[in-house]
Structure formats: structure tokens, C-alpha cells
Amino acid sequence: QQQTVVMETSKADHHKHEQSKLAYSSDVQDAEHSHHNEHGGQIYQSTSLENAWAVDEDGKGSVSTELKTWVGTDENKIFIKAHVEKAESEKAETEAMTLYSRNIADFWDAQVGLRYRSEAFETHRQEAVDAAFGLHGLAPYFFETDAYLYAGEDNYAGFSLETERDFLITQKLIIQPYLELDAIFSDDSKYAKKTGLSSATAGFETRYEISKKIMPYIDIAYEYSKGNDETSWQIESNSEKGWLYGAGVRFRF
Image (tube, rainbow, N blue to C red; front, side, top):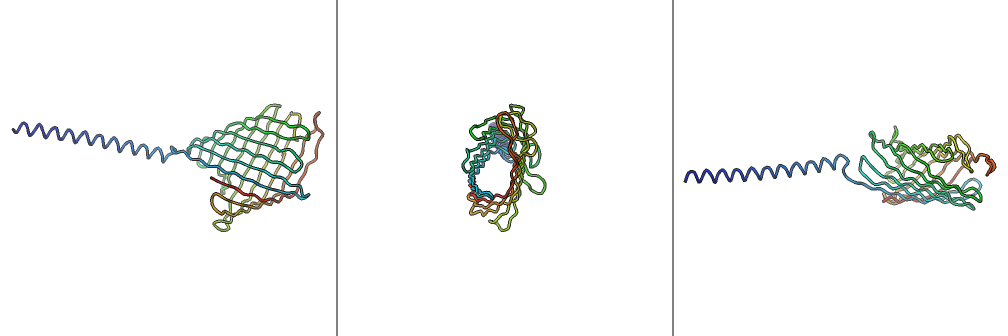
């Protein structure tokens, strides 16, 4: 009888030991899953759509639409950007980018991908696809920055920079100074732009956030454009500069 009791006790202890092992294994798996989520395992997504209207000093107007969307984890993301602009009495110009983004440091991602651009020149249209290499992140003093180098056919090489920062007047009223630069290092295409600083825009956007999804704004900016180079397909154009006044609405979801 004592032997039977010992055997039953041994079986009970073994059963408890197996249950403890299963519970420990489950706890480890839960901890690993939680650890994975805390260190970049979750997938996020953000999209913004912006419509804007602007007029220059001569009263010439333009409309533009801009889409920005990304999806991915803290470490790896896919970015898609598209911009369409149409000036009064002119054909629309389009630019679109698809980028792979990889986190390389605190607040900074390295990006690589392709850019498609379609530009209108009087009766003709020039289309091209460029390789794009750049950085996306937060510069010192909280300036959100995108900087890209481009290389494409017809010996094309260029650079673009966009940087901006928010200053809160209230929780809903925000002023955002910004700077946009485009430079051309070389371009042997039929409708080439002049090399050097091709265009620059500096301005102040003032927006009111009705909610985090709907944000109307007004915009005042000073713009400079260097013009087109002389080629066998086009005549040289002079530089232009002046003030722009605009308004728009941004949707984020």
C-alpha cells in the first residue's frame, strides 16, 4: 500500500512538472511576442492628401494635388509620393516616387527607389525615370527633412531638399516655415533646365487643425525659378521670381 501511494505521488509530481513546463513555454512565447512588438515588429500606415490653390503677383493661378503614403514597421517601410501641378493655361506636370526606407539611426531613414517625372514644354512633353537616393528624418531643432540625389538618362543628375518645422500658437493653430530647393548638376535632355540652383521656395504655412484628419491652411511664399537652358529643341528662358499666395486643405488618415 505504501508503494502504491509513492507511485501515485510520483505521477502527480510528474504531471505538475509537465504543466509547469507548458506554462513556462507559454510565458516565454508571450514575452517574445511582446518584445517583438516593442522593437519594431508592428506594422503601421499613414496617408495624407493635400489640395492647394495658389496665385502669383501677376494674378496667374495654379492648382496642385499631393499624395504621401507609407506602410511598414519602425525599421522597414515603403513610401509612395505623388505630386500633380497645373498652372493656368498650361499642361499639368507630374512627379511620383516609390521608395524603400530603412531606419539607420535615431530619427533617420535611408531611402532608395525610383522617381517618375513628366514635364510640359510648350507643345511637347518630356518624361523620365530617375534613380533616387536620400535621407528622411528629423534634423536638429525638429526640422522634418527630405533630401534626395537623382541620376537618370541623358546624363541627368540632380538634388532636392525639403525641410519644415511646426510652431504651435495654440493646440490647433500652427505656423509652419518651410524651404524647398531643387538643383541640377547636369542635364543633356532635349528640354534641359539650367544647371545650378534650379528653383527655390521659402514660405510660411498657417493651418488650423479642425481635427488630426482635416487641416485647412493659408500659405505665403517667395519663389525663384532659374529657367530653361538653350538646346536645339528650345530657346533659353530667363529666371523668374516673386510672391505666391495660396490656400489649401490637408487630409490625413
